[in-house]
Length: 61
Image 1 (cartoon, rainbow, N blue to C red):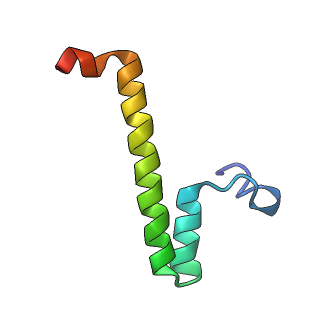
Image 2: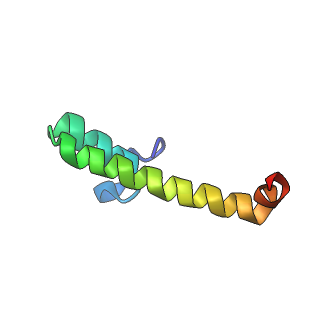
Image 3: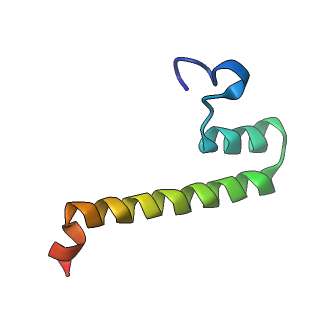
């Protein structure tokens, strides 16, 4: 995103950028909150998967 500024037609925008634009460019704070929650859920799932792959969760328990 830093190199392309969203690329042609916003092709390289990420979810958190959409959240920012929804809140501060369009005033859609409720939509931005939904984007943030969805982004958090996606990142949490990825984190758990990575912890399982690396074996850290088994070492803790």
